[in-house]
Every structure is written in structure tokens, then in C-alpha cells.
Length: 551
Image 1 (cartoon, rainbow, N blue to C red):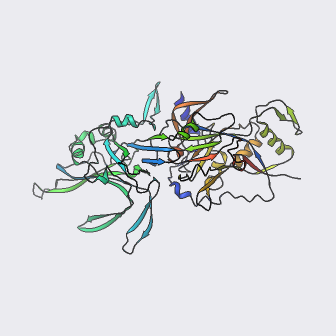
Image 2 (image 1 turned 60 degrees about the horizontal axis):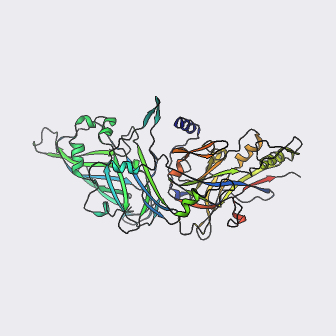
Image 3 (image 1 turned 60 degrees about the vertical axis):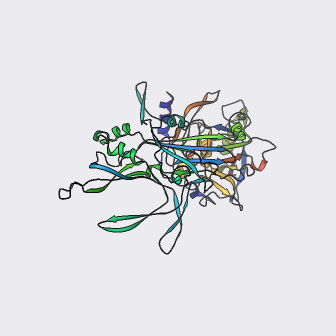
């Protein structure tokens, strides 16, 4: 029943194509999008109740990009990211040829990068994007054949449902990996001491008897075990290579496992694995009738990590957090849902988010048609009742409404900060009105940095949301969710493995989190809404509304 409900909610959410943008791309763009010039306006501040919510194991299949590596975050702990992907032949029912012999096998997966310089010979210098931790960090990378066939759907009670894979399934896939190490080259930089290199590759290409140079941007480029592909591909029964469904039952994919590389510092990268491919270079007897019987010709077979050109294969990202004690307690045992939390801990992946309830929950009165207070609860917070009355009787007009989240700079010292936050309708798992109206400019959520280049705050404009609450007396004052964000165009939601009851009366469950948060490995610590000596008054979370108030 839960999965069916989740699917219905997801279908109601505003959808967008997956246009990936590196988190770093938004750093400079955010400045000045939401101005602070409110000359001639009067502001009022209202209470907000905000508390932490742990994100338990969450759906992580078929995301783009995916994390790979180990990220040691001094504030939150260590995140280890492993990955599994089905693969498919670029072209099915290939003609292998007679007496095939492999020359080499190479896997290539491009990194996100940008050019920083080009010399007079045309050589480019690159810098990698979306690298977290020590830029020169190393990891032990091991690639194996996967022993688990990943399916796109499953049946429950006679109903076909999507098949989900979750962030906590690494042990399951690791225990069922098949055979021996595939990236077993003698070069330790391809396995035991792997690192994400920013070098440009130069490949020699021969076409029509002429040689040329092809420049290739930075990528993961590894040699894979030749005998394995000789046996599994070149010697395979033709029926195993005939169709995608048969092939993916026969060859169930690749599993990427990472570990610490000795005492070296580690790092993590976000990678678009769907652009990856495996090329099998081999020779087979020529099909020409005029060549000598023993003449061999060079051939290739390409396997894609996204399957064939007409399909998308399943993938999953496994994210394990070894949490620091303060972070762990803040999102589990020390959550204060009555008074709010002093600090809000947001972290992507299988991390943490915040839940916000606008306005003081006190409900002891309402207002009549003349704008006079009337005793008696009406199911609406008194602060919202007052706003509605002022708008109707005094003709107050909302010009702008903002939530400003201030970063605890001391707790975030020496820690990389996410460049964007995402505020959404937590009750219904969908975007807010302001986001759907103009997410690109006025909505905000981008980090504001100071002269020291460190983050100061995030501002989110919710003017449309507040106006709607005022003009529509039947509009529900929904809870809001706040998460870190990787891409502003990724608006789908990923299901939790097990839903969590977060409220008793009325009963309310936490069942999904925005995918954009699962994709982002970073975190931040914000000042919360609790009235406490440890929360400076000028940084305490409040809803600020700017009005035009007629005389």
C-alpha cells in the first residue's frame, strides 16, 4: 500500500528533465538574485518551528550523477560511496568473427571538468569539478562482475511496481560479487592507489590509412582483465548476446567497490556513469575471401554502462556514513519537535534534513468580519489568523516573504559548504508555488558568501506561498522540508526504505526525500528556531514578511 501511495504522490509532483549542473556552477550566479532593497515597506517577523529529521536508507537507483569514493568530512564524518551498474552491448547479435583473440579491454568514464588553460600546441589543462576532500587523495578501487540481476519492476499482490534499490545495500552486492578483480593491471594507479586524474588524454586514430590525434578530456581510464572478456564475450554462445534482457541475465553488471588506500587521504567524485563504456579490442580472422586463411583483422565490441542506445540500464549508489557523535545525536536522540532545535543539520545522501512549521502553533482565537478577535480555537495558528485579518480589514499587501537560514560559521569552519538549499512542500512531497513559478531567479536558496569567501546564509523567497495562505482560507499551512540540493532541475522524490512516523496526532509519516539531496554529499549546519542563549537573536530562524500598509 505504501509504495502505491508513494507512486501517486510522485506522479503529482512537478517533473523536470534531468539537466545536471555541478553544484559549483551556482556559486557566483546566486549573488544578488534576491535583493534587500525594501524602501518604503514595513516588515513583520513570525515564528517558525524547525527541527532535525534523520534520512534513513533511501532509494538510490538510476540517479545521475553518482558518487564514488570516500569523503572524510571533519564536521559530519566519513561517507563511503560504492556503485553498481548493469551494462549492455552497444549493438546486439554482434558478428564476433572466427578465432578471436583479445588485444586489450579498456573502460572509460568521463569526469565533470572544465578547461583552465590551452597552450600554443593545443594542449589543454583541466580542473575536475565535483571532487570532495583532498584533491590529490587516493582510494583503493576494485571492480568486479556483479552477481545480482537488477530488475526494473517487481510484483506485490498482483500489482507491478517499480523495483527500488537503496543506499544501505552495499553489503548485499559486495557479498555476491562474482570472480576475481577485473581492474587487475600491474599499474597500482588503476586499483590499489587509484586517484581521479585531471590529465588530458591523447589518442592516436588511424582512418583511411591516415593517422590523427584525438584529444580526450579527463576520464577514468582503466585496463580490465582480458581473459575474463575473452571467456564472457568472445567465447559466449551467440544466444547470450542476442538481446538485452538475455544478456543482462547472463552478464549482470559491474560492481565498483572503494576502500582506504593505506594511510593516504581519500576523496570522492560525482560521476555520470551513464556516459561510460567498455571497449574490447581484439583480432579475428578476416572475412575477405581474397586474404590468406590466417589473416587477422582488428575489431572492437563496445559495452555501455547505460545499456543499449534504446534503453537505460539500472544503477544504484550505496552510501555509508560513519557519523561524528555530535551530528549523530543532533538528528536522532536530541531532536526537539516541541520547541525546535538550536541547530539544523542538513546533509545529503543518507543524511539529514529539517522540517519547518510556519507560525507559532498557538491556536486560541480567530477574527470576525470586523477584524475583532474572537475567543476559541479554529484549527489555524493565531499568527496566520492575524495576517489574514490584516489583509482583509486593513488592506495590508504582501510584497515579499522570506526565510533566511544563517550558517553557524564556527561549526562549519574548515568544512566545504553546499552552494544550494531546496525548500519544498513536505506534506505533499512537491514543489512550492514560488518554485514552480520562477525557480531560476526569484526563489533563491543559493549561498551568500562574505569577504572571507565563507558562507553566511541562504535565503528562500516564499512570497507566493504566503499570499496563497492569506487569500485562500481553506489552504492548509503545510509543513516544509529543507535539504541540500545538487541540481535545481531535479524535482523527483526518492522513497525511504521504511517510512517513519514523525507525528502522533494526527498521524504523519516521513516517506520520501528529494532526489537532489540524495545526489549531494555535502552538509551544512544552520542556526535553528529555538529561543536559546546559544542562538543569536539576529540569526534565529524567522519568517519575515514585507508589507505595504495603507495609511
